Length: 278
Image (tube, rainbow, N blue to C red; front, side):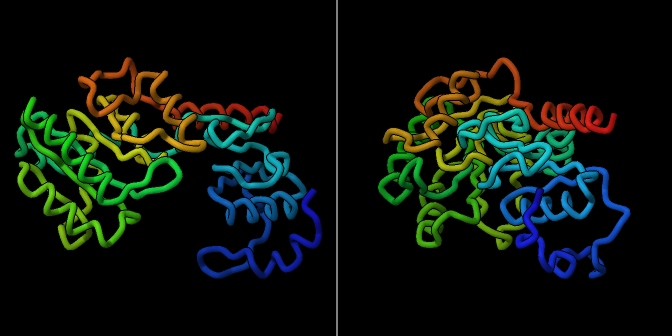
């Protein structure tokens, strides 16, 4: 039961896209992601007298019993009958998504194979990503290029420090390929990079990028010169055990299957919802 103190004024706070207040008929199922959405789901659950089936994605930082289902990576440590644990994140990468991106970004075919997509994030508890890290990272990529040739298709995330962005562009300039920093470089080619890559290299900090790369079925590698820290260590180990991740200095290996958790979770949520309606 949602406490009255937490839902006081909820009628004013909950609004539809057109600005109107939320009111019956309540949705049969509501899906939210993140801590803000968790509060809204709790309010919907209370105002619908439990008739709205609530699915919370990511750790809500409160008791999972407030929701019908919580979907969260296992490395977050959540457990219980209402929790669906995953290895990585929920995302859109799937065969149809990749096929559409392959067609949309057909110009990427111009770059020589093996095409190595390089997905760059930012430092966090997993690994410090500073200039010293990237110097070693570029050296490792240069060694791979010397051995196999090909090209690098590089994209930076919004989290990549501004001070490092020009330095990274210059560091990749000697190699064939493309470098995407922002819309100033044209349309974001991220989906195309995943679709056209023969190999994907991801910095160790991003659960989302590593999960999306593992869903492609391509060989995925990371570069972590220091031991992975915190809960990210559990995440990396799960990927390695499943064959979805290896070190950059290893020969590329195609995994036995893509990491296709999103579709599996959707099937399980639908099954539980249908059971709850009986």
